[in-house]
Length: 341
Image (cartoon, rainbow, N blue to C red; front, top):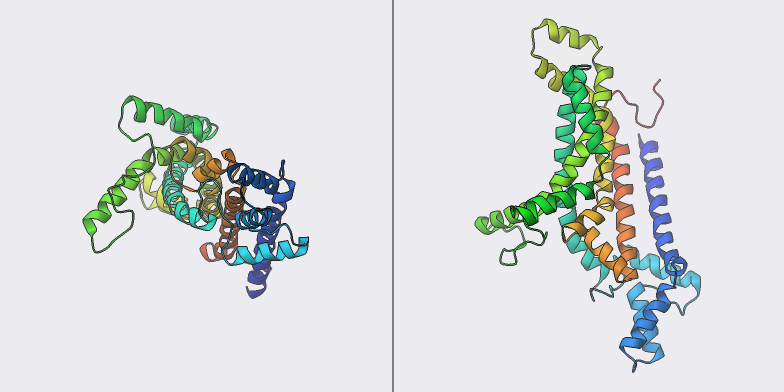
C-alpha cells in the first residue's frame, strides 16, 4: 500500500508540475505575446509611465519578470505558484488568487449538488432498468437516456433560461444572489444564514437542473450495464426466494454492488466539475470560476486565464488521485496497487 501511495503521489505531482510549466510557456506561446499586449495596454492607458515602471507592472500582472534570464523567470514563477501568487488580474484589478478563491466556492456548491443529484437519480434508474431488462420501461428509459446524454447541457440551459426565466419568470435570469443578504454562513444569525442558503439555491436552480437533466441519462445507462452483470449472482436468487419485492432487490442488492465500478467516475466528475463550468456559468451569469475564465478570455486577461487553467487541471488531478487511493477501501475485492495473489 505504501509503494502504491508513493507511486500515485509521484504521478500526481508530476502532472501538476507539467501543468504549471505549460502555464508558464503560455506566456510565450499564445498568439500576440501576452507580455507585449500588456505593455501596449499600459502605454496606451498611461502614456506618462516610464519604461521601468511599465516593466514592473507587466511583471506584477503575469507574475514573471521578462527582463530576467529564462531560468530565473521560471523559478520565480514556480515560487509564486507555491505561495499562491498567480499574478494580478488586468480586467478585475485584483489578485488572481483572490478572484479565483472567491469564485471557486460558488462553482463547487452548484456543481457538487448537481453531480450528487445526477448520480443518485441515474443509479436508481439504471438499477430498475437492468432489473426489468427488455421490458417497455427499459426500452423507453434507454431511449430517453441516450437522447438526454447526447444533448449538450448548454442547449438545455438556454431552453430552461428562456422558459422558466424570461417567459414564466419563476427563476432569476442571473446567478448573482441578492445583495441585501449576508454572503456568509453565520451560525449566530440562523435567519440570515437560511435566507442566504435559500437564495443561493434559488439562483443556482436552473444551472443545477441543466446539469442533472442532461447528465443522469448517461449515468443510468452505465449503471444499467454494471447491474446486468450482477443480476446472475446467487445471492439475488436467494433474495427472490425470500419473497423480497422487485424494487427492494433492484435498489438494495443490485445497486449496492453495481455502483462500485462507478465510484471512480463520481470522483473524477467532482474533479472535472470546475473545468466544465465555463459555458453554463456564462449562460446564467453565475459568479463562479468558469464565468471569470470566460470573461478573462474575452478581455484578454492572460493572468486570470492562466490561473484558471492551473486551478482546473489541479482539481482534475486531485480528483483522480483521491479516486486511486480510496477505491480499494470502497471495494475490498480490488487489490490496491499490488498483486492479487
